[in-house]
Image 1: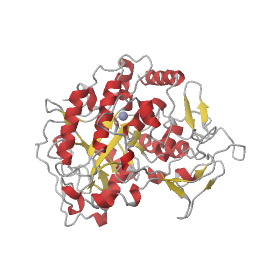
Image 2: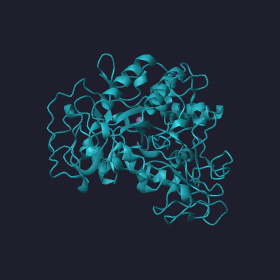
Image 3: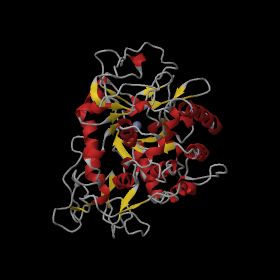
Length: 485
Ligand SMILES: [Zn+2]
């Protein structure tokens, strides 16, 4: 069975283009696994961890935090980002905002929004340049280059990969490892293979029915696999991405709740919500408004966030935990779970509203037009449209001219980098920061949650304000999609 079937629930144009991820997943994983791993030799101090359904660090389930990872695939655009932000508009037990991970493909992506997504504490990861099933090395490496050049993301912070169509192969994983990524998150976990994240020193332990676990297949020391955890629908068919496309909102909430309970009342393996934001985004003139589906997903997310030991984290935060597991009661004080923003007097093109006037990077974002295509960035516009063979063309502006933007180096993080001043505003540990944590009790009540639109949800976020979708943006989006066809 297809784990993701394109159900004709949205405007055909959108669904036929963007419901791209699909993977064939068997109902059971009873095919014999050839995976073996000896925990006595594979130790975390050597960046090795065996696949296991038990919590890391020998913690009991009651002491183990329940992680929820919300991940998003494909391009980042204004309306899609509003939807995505609405899905992590929750407060973690330590008062910090929940965060998610976006696997970004380059075509039609707004790089100024990528920067804002990252600056708000979320993660960006690699989903290839042009969304191809068996990517070349350039399809993968060009994403890193563009995210660095046009969104100001340090190379070291781009750590994850997901294969388009969930169509990963031994060769693709090999490229991912060669290019220095820290993890892949494409394999699927169904029932008895609901493993916590593990390293591929001893190969894959998921999707073994395909033969990928056999000796001589994948063996990539130090590369983590974060399995995607499926939800079983009423016919016991595993649904991986866009679960809400497989039934009514009430159905999919019920299946998702049952799947979550299996994790939460079991060994607390992370629970995932994997989406293409386009399926939950209301478009002007759209044939089938997904607002009802979106509201059901938001209600489900809020109900999970109301639990005292549930944490909405990025994949990078999850891996930090895997390397040094602590009790749930100690998680909130870990460095990687803090939420701080720099104190800077004026907007500097860092993805934040530093001067608190309600507009991020006020007046600093460049619109780059290349005739038939365009893109936005807080860095220099390239003189020509980026392409697979030349993802970062020479910039249109000359160094030394007014407004020239300098690329970020790996000794600075995005929120501190002033691309116009060409300096890192924080190079020591004592830079002035403010926490954006709020008391958990301020989280909106979940019991009587009412209709939430993406725009409304975002207004509460505080980390970023995304305006409503303009008709022009929509027109551009539809043009972009039709080009993909
Ligand atoms: Zn995709």
